[in-house]
Length: 155
Image (cartoon, rainbow, N blue to C red; front, side, top):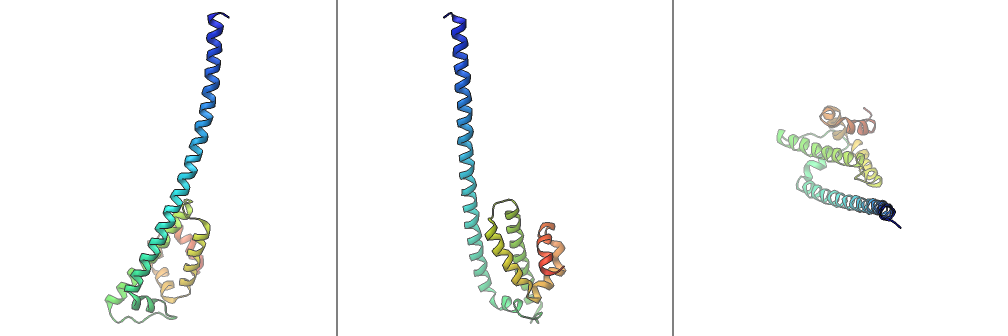
């Protein structure tokens, strides 16, 4: 075998091994991306849980406001400050839902979690205060959230 034939043979082996290395590398990257996606979803799930816990703690701090917002009629506020607190609490709830909706659309929140959040929104839609808030403030929220929530509130 002459040098030229030997060099071509080595080149062919090199190309073959290079192709195998590329396939192995792509497989490795696919596994890493899948693991990273699962880790990201777990992190988001933990953040959702922590956010829910924080929200419950805040609601406990404003239980009297929340109780009025949860009535079967539009509440009577004892002061402008109490009404302002209610607006802040309602806005925080809708912003929270807006964030969850965005994460769901991006594939970061799983469908069962989003469905549970939608059920919470459906319950809130039965409360006159939340419906009134949504009808007056809906343009302050994202158009994607409006598309999700408008049918729930019948807007």
